[in-house]
Amino acid sequence: MTLDPETLELGYKIATDFVGSDEGRTFTLTLRPDVTFTDGTPLNAAAVKVNWDRLRDPELASTAIRQAAQIAATEVIDDRTLKITLPEPNENFVQGIVNTSMNWIASPTALAEGREAFDENPVGAGPFTLAEWTRQDTIELEKNPHYWDAPKPYLDGLSIRMPTDTNQRFNALSTEAADLSTEASWKILSMAEDTGLMTESVDTGGGQFIALNLRRAPFDDERARRAVVLAVDAEAINAAVYEGSAQTQSFLFPESSPFHRDIAFPKRDAESAQKLFDELAAEGKPVKFTFLSYPTPESRGLGESLQAQLSAFENVEVDVEIADYPAATARAGARDFDAMISTAVIQDPDYALWTAFHGDSPGNVTGIDDEDLNYALDVGRASTSMDERAQAYATVQDRLVALNPAVWTIRSAPSTIWRESLHGVVSYAWGSPLPEELWLGE
Image (cartoon, rainbow, N blue to C red; front, top):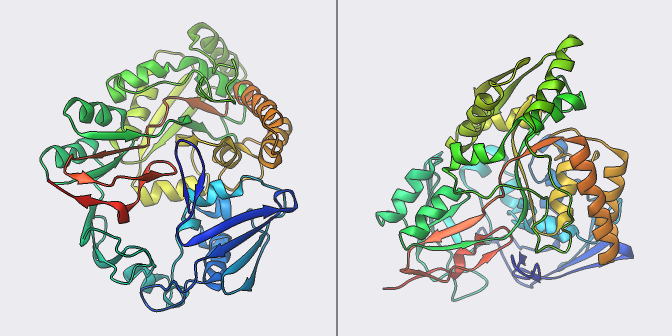
């Protein structure tokens, strides 16, 4: 399924319908007939059930468990129809499916071969098949001649590379070594626009934040969180990490959003921050923590900027620890960190905010668990009334500002950059381009 990034209207591909009933407790998924995976296995309701039941298994440790965990049961009605039952009503459940790996269905036959075998030879029903994969380097794809939506795809193949360095990605585009890049760096987006490359960005709320772990000291004390929030200048982070090209956040929702309220994030107040640091130190609880960084320049730069800003204060000490992707991801999943970079990118507010800040959410990195916040998030999830949802998310904004589980830094910039010779760039959800629509011209 797809989601129009501007209108948030649901579109269909292999699914043909997704309808809720019983106030959002039950959904019915309908599939196209006669679609098969590239190994010949039918892509039917039973195949979707296998995938979604697998993703909600905690032992798998999938990032999609944040959404899949909402499912209480799945039931195959017939070959094309799957019934999904939720333990609690969620009228907006489909929003999370489209934005997670629940939207990508793998062959149950291939999955049954085991994780190692599937990693070496993943099997889906998409427009391309895997030809070659060099770990942490390049994925080579070939056109699927039996793709259900013929004559798509229009390209004979795709070569996908995943450099973590933003400048390397930009250089590949500017030197014609690549045709398209998905991007999240404001700096690179600005450079691309200046050099005449084609760009498209999704307008979102929320964005990037420094997650403070409430599960352990020092951030189990709200005063420590408030002190750090008041001590940090988001504009200084913007200048240091993004050369001033990013957009900082004053509010959770942009002013164009129907959910926007005049509830601003706290502004830098060095005097109040120092008083809180001194107060905690006098009680024998000086603020000392480590920022866990991914190996990307942005994450590392964010940690170093945070460290530099807080070094101007007394009774606070910050270290920066850089870990590789697998280690940092595992530490985040185990909640073994003091502070680290995270995001809550908002289109419809339910998926991003419930996932990031509800006390029952497996995706709640900060560990915040506030009764009023939880209730408001539940109301916003279950209600179909715009007025009721708007009031609920006003409460959400109030509680996030009061409790300070995060230091909000910059808005996210989910973007696509491409060369003029590439056509058919059609994006869905958070700006992911549909590969079957791409074609090359002069």
